[in-house]
Length: 194
Ligand code: F6P
Image (tube, rainbow, N blue to C red):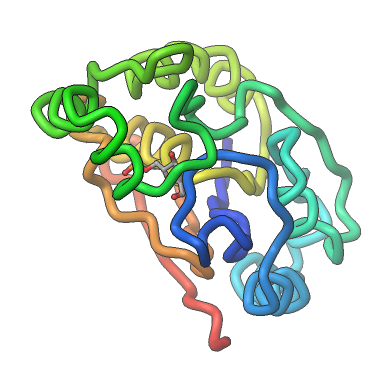
């Protein structure tokens, strides 16, 4: 691809409550980010803006974040957030209290830890392979997805070992532009002022 833009969905109601997973809608701030996103993309892409295809997950918060973009859009199930299984909808505090062994196991090996009934980072990296293969064949793509998924995609393009992906920082309300180059991939970020 010529250019890949990455963004987390805007702040969700679950983000506000510090709950993981789920399929909640955006908060007021998150909604504000979605309304500013077209201008931010335009600022970053210039005339190429119209040639960008937008990929989202199947979850409401990514589609809501893309709602004001008039570009062609495609939904991928493979871009859905890491499945937290039995912990879906809980806060980290609740997990620590209810499943202390799981909480500790995750702390000890975050990349390999698979939530019961859910996924690990390794699982996510694996299911992203077809997405990345398709991405390689495309020109300009904006991917609006979730924290864990973006960590894996970012690590892939930045040549960060996948095992380190669980600690990559992908802030909210920030558009990341990646320009893959033969020798050095170029990254620029635009933080939304909201
Ligand atoms: O809190 C937002 C979120 O996207 C959760 O849905 C997800 O479980 C989590 O981040 C992934 O981050 P971490 O792997 O650091 O728990």
